[in-house]
Each structure stands twice: as structure tokens, then as C-alpha cells.
Image (cartoon, rainbow, N blue to C red; front, side, top):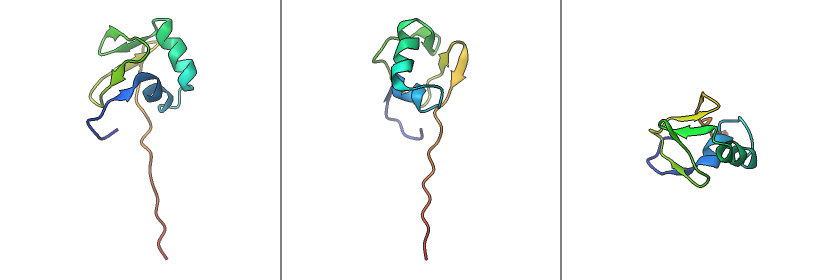
Length: 71
């Protein structure tokens, strides 16, 4: 994430490759997700500068690369 736009927490976690969005929602509901040290809620938004932890592990989304092949 290189922009200043927020992302829904479950999408942010799923983009890390850890789990699906539904599974991320379960982690959040169980109280296992923290944003900047505070317990997260389903529907929370995450900014690129935020620190997200799931089960104590820092999560970062995988950067997507776009390749263009030119003749």
C-alpha cells in the first residue's frame, strides 16, 4: 500500500496472504486483531502507516506488481 487511502481491515489482512476475508473477520471478532495496539472491530479501516497484529504477528499486505511486456 503506497497511498494514503484507508482499506477495510479484513481486506488488509487477506492481502497479506494469511487468510480469506471471512477468516479475517473471525480473527477480528475473537479479539485477536490489534491496530496500533488497540483491539480492532469488524469494519475498521487501516491506513498504510498503521501497525496491524493478528495473533501477535505483524501483518503487511503483499505489494502487487504489474508487468507490461512490450514487443
